Length: 488
Image (tube, rainbow, N blue to C red; front, side, top):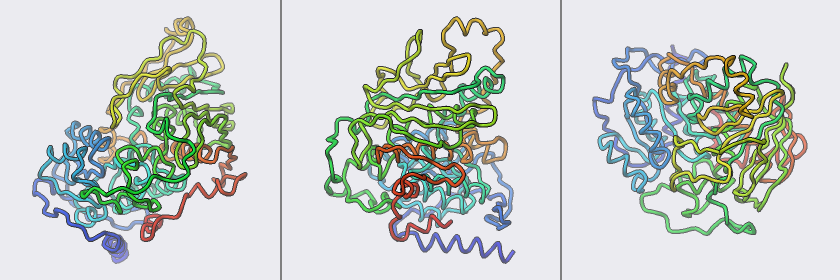
């Protein structure tokens, strides 16, 4: 027990050391306080002492409560399986956070996740992280080290190394994890899985994945050589905590509220944003793992600071047991539309896709989706939970009577995570599934950023043909005092 107590104490000391001196509401309403189950990490260290939870609901904290984070909060609360016990956001005065603060006026509020975990770590079962891509890593790592289950928006992390460390830490601390590609709990997941297992989808050699809608950085000056100048900082924004591990930048409005997705320093562009909604089931059920080569065959408007105006990227995967080598060709950019098969039909936009923070998703020349080319059949699909159809329609009719029954989902993505926290279901997009998928996107953004082909060794997880690209697997060193999160 002495070893267990020392382990717990060291984690508490870490939080106290790293937490900033910030004001935070620390009086916790009694209706949110529940006893915790004993939780032990993979080394046998006690993370929480044992007692009986008097409710079927889990206590969840929310990091990032505006824009998409606010949407996830509402999705979790609509399950009826969650107690909202804490709300954390670096800007508690922004318009996009005020709505949810108004809806939950009695919950403890924090601007710094480190302070929240210091004050309430032993009262939190799970945390939902709806912050920008680059800030997922430190919040997730600290939470897992405390034995707290983690739901993280997609993509998992901004760098290859961060995705790797998050996957390893989830195993080490034995917590439930889920990445927020919600279609991974809907009809597409179960159909794709069933059709692969029954041999309907087989011998796939090629897939196109496309997202051709307008992005925030489209139309920017591609000759830009410097980041935008600093602006006056909003009084309610904790800019230092917003930056987290990222290298220092002076505040600018083009870095926040979704604009962070434009920049290599902060986001993952169209590929990181939409890839997890389009490639996810193919990646998992075709056992793709990591590519051996990533080739940016087309980059329009290349700039080293922000993402291209259009990209075509080939991800080349080797033979996997009985499955042949396969290429996924990713297309983004408004006019960079892939060729489609004859009799493709109408490109439909799934009405259930969540709206972007700057408005609704608008239809484009070819709506987000995929085309999968197998040995005998070709499949057409959309994004998120949209199901596949077989092309041409005559081929579909010929095998319609022999298609296997597809099981219905037992839970949506948010319910699945809660049930995973309770040990009742396996999280469908846990880090063992979602980290390698995110690493595919991490490699893709390196190829975009350098506008060069990269060759990747799947065994050593290194880029072998470009030393600078290999350094970008880890990215720039974290700012002082943020390197601690890479050691948890």
